View 1 (cartoon, one colour):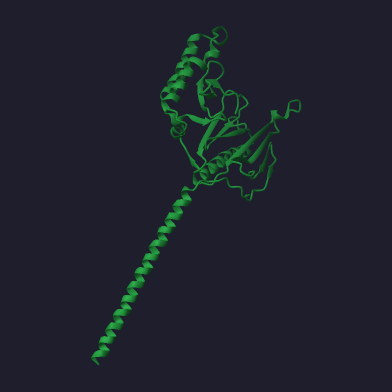
View 2 (cartoon, rainbow, N blue to C red):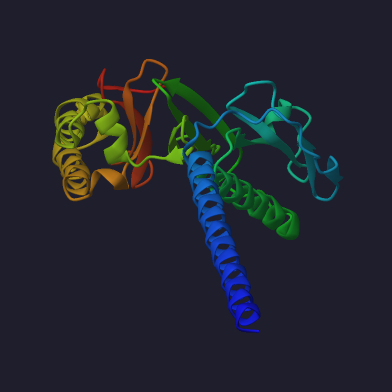
Length: 296
């Protein structure tokens, strides 16, 4: 009887020991699986991104006919295309149409881009771009009027040492004032980089950029206005120049739209107080060559 009790106790202890050991083995495997999953997730987050060439299902092309006619055409990217025209919108102002003029007199084209890189930053930018211009198009349709502050959209993009720069310009009939938006992206990570990061990657000092802008405003940008008999009193020219200097002496580098052009030169979108026409005009300035950029 005593032997049976001892044997029973031994069996119970063995069962408990096996159970405890099994729990620790299960727990160890669970911890290892969790660690592997975390490492895998981290690798996926930091892996270099590649352009997504898989075609997406596109919305149907559309024509909305009214006093202004709006035509929408959607497109997928070509293979390895970093930036592409996802949506082309043609707006025709039929009310102001005059057959004696070229068709560009009443036709406005919006080439709405999307960036073809897979990342959270890029997805956010793409949604931001698309929403902004869809809102503009929808407003024109609702009001049956052309948006005089955005009479078309053009864009260009440049690739330099792993950095993608996208430049978008809202066209206007006046031509003197336009809006410009730039994005600079590290292609390998798909992350947006601000101006300070951009300059660091190009080994350019932030202070050098500000000094170049200030110097060029003072000695270069207003050279075309040095004919007082044609453009007005020199005191007014000096006043407008000083207003522009004051503006750029007192803003941070991240308040300026910067990008790299196809020669890897830093270019800046600037608002300049004018001496003719409206109160100000807008220009893109090449900081390397100290010249206005004719067009993108």
